Figure (tube, rainbow, N blue to C red):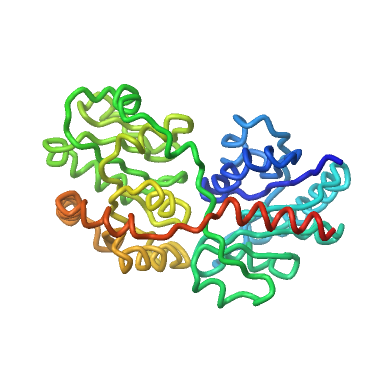
Length: 357
């Protein structure tokens, strides 16, 4: 009998890429895969390359602050719930795997109402609001940090780590240089602003360009509509809104990475052994999970961390020089790290959920 699975999660790339990492392994196991996301979120764009049936549903955000949309979004969530329920009744999946994000809430709750087992994945140290709203409906909750396991029901929490896309480790340094048009042998600095962009990081990097370009080539993934058109022809500086298949080559080429501290992003940096400078989102603009993630990595010797509120051109340049000069020390700590075999563990949990059904 053909097994069916629905993957869900979206809003940012970090809520999608771990699902993508599972796809080839699920196909190997004989699963027919469907994806439920928002009508036009980043998840739709990212999943398009994988020959998977994609369903869009209405979504609403759960905010902790006042916004006029707080009055309309609950109705969008209710609409999304009914749409998800119709899709699940039509496709009859054996199991749901949810990476979180607000689109996942109606999907998981619709699945629960139809007695379809659900497995959640929480990347951050403290569970996000969307996942917290789904805990009761979940059979298992996969976690990235040991601290997270202690915050969740003991019979549901499993320490798995985050699935990393295997193709990320299969890039070509030369293909990356060709893609960016870098012809000299200066070390390469890779800046990842995040799929939604990171204005303060983007601006500070651009202020620092005259000094940094003397010593580094720079590839800058700056986020949707965040490119600086005045700097399109600056030699040694290449910008992209977002990259897909070429990302593996850019990672292979990079000697040092500047990034926000979303859990999926930093787990990829660790798995790929890339010395890095982390600039976590300020607690004023988030729930502070990136600060906790970054502190954990700094304490383990994997990263240098800059407080977003203290970020300026001089601190950034100094931190980059320091990490690059001490890159062997950071690499030694990364080499000692024991990575959890996340993909295999999660596939086992999915199979067990199907067998118990």
